[in-house]
Length: 467
Image 1: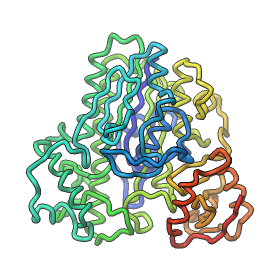
Image 2 (image 1 turned 90 degrees about the vertical axis):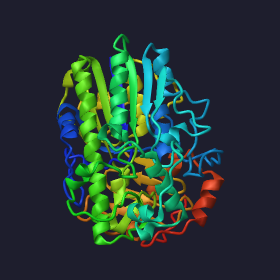
Image 3 (image 1 turned 180 degrees about the vertical axis):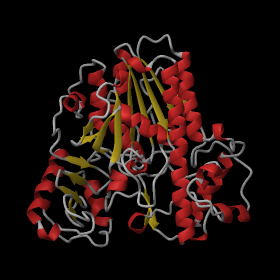
Image 4 (image 1 turned 60 degrees about the vertical axis):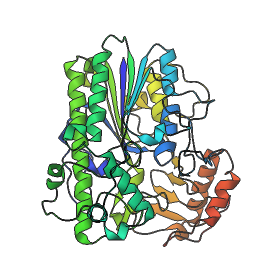
């Protein structure tokens, strides 16, 4: 059996029509929705750690990254990112390495440039790895520079600071001569993946990982995609401020339209890849997995960007759809809790590879096929010094020093409108104990110190349920 894993970056679960729609209106995703009809849909899938690189470390290894022991990376050629923002540890075998040892031909097609920066190693275990250049601030092009007039068009005044200007300069430089749709990034990734399939039809079995940085910002799309959602023209807005939303009504709507348009472009070219699998006669013997690393806030509760504290569903809840060969079990819906490192273990099990004892993820597909209602009783998700613990009933987010607590009851109306931590100290204590157990009994000292330095978010509880 062949396996294809497709990962989009920053694709909101609610922007896939089969899952619902975001608060600003429906997003057009006919190919994602058609895939959903042939797949098993999982409704409670979460990352193991966030954001981009920690999420992929767990997905590529089946190992926990939280609570970030040895995770304070300061590597040349990269910025100091979130905890765990580094390479895959050398002693941890990757899914690709294990599958290659089991006779799979392996390939990675990706434009997620963070994976390919100096000191990174996410291509370990792949017989072929292809890095498509030019996303975000990847130094793929060096000129010409933007004029101030061009900067003012691409970057709203509230977002103009040294970092924002440097960001937009590189983004637009990287787009020179790419203004035909086929040269945009998601189309290039999907076309290159289809080309790999064409060139490797002789493989007895293969593992293909397709990584699309889209629909991550900058939300650069052909104008016709944006006009599907906003016909009004005016200044452009293609990035986040990673702060409380500072934009006027038009610029926020422009942001949402650009994001929606980019999702629709991703959908179109995902359809191209699926059609390629079909016409090459591969679908009857291929397991196709569709997921994302995390979502993105686009004006939700007045925020533009993604953040781990306070954590919210638009960033933390991710889609997962698995299409079995011949679309067996199509239409099944699964509501139990799973995470990225469980998906890694599932891929290995479905490939018939014995799981190494050090893998911490748990394979779940057979449990889903047998109709099990529960798999995990909770998930713990790491984002630097602010763990999140989720059960069927509760959502806890706090700082690793035990302060700044948010507790939400998930089975109530307006579930994220009221922080109930002060009303349920026993629940807070229990969930913190679960987070600490998943951390191996303690947090790294540098994480605790980071928590102490981080301000508590507005509206949090001062409960300190020490364990």
